[in-house]
Length: 291
View 1 (cartoon, rainbow, N blue to C red):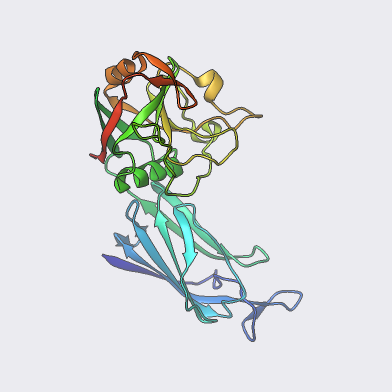
View 2: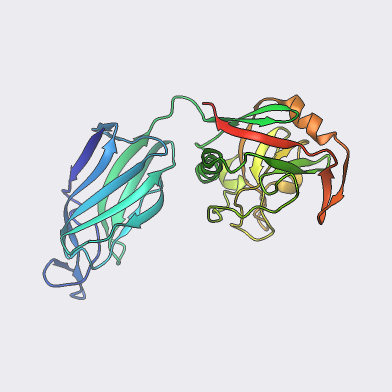
């Protein structure tokens, strides 16, 4: 894997920090300056091409870096500073979750642009996940172009094995829902923090029949491990409006639509405080990324 190094020209500052030396603003506040930024690993360095869902390291070199900087990188999730930073070097890590072209900028605390880089993340084919259930397989094709946060969250749970031996705990002729309970109706504790809601107004995706979405409470940004399939077109009630955040769609059923419909048709009853639990448990035996 390669490392990409950018020498800063016109935008010679990357972070804002306070200390002696460095450039000054009109009110004489000391600002950070940056001489270079390096990112690794990369697939290509000119232009900068990064790998989807890979962790990267950004090293910023300059002066007065501990004055503070704002890094705007829409391709990154979980931007975190590594320990051991100094006035001349600061290191950050993040995970690439966006697909396609995007721009990274760095500004100081006065919002002056200090750094700019165009980046790209190629993806030959959209990710697919196979849910093996006791009623057959459902293959889901995910859309990281439109809903990168939801897709990455779902894949994190898939790759950790979280969904193995969980059930569809809701089947109500509107949706089938899973990802939160064991066959004995023991509630599972999510292993990752709740994610930011990706509104259907922003993504352009809709809660039409056969799509998959993130289940959440009525509180915005509360989705974790639970997901649902739209058995019917729920766009009018699940999509976002100007007054409601709605529910985030992040993919569609690629194959196994008949399995979804069969699960929805099973007899249900109220169990464990849940109103429409299949009488015979429908178990997800495994969830595997297959593309």
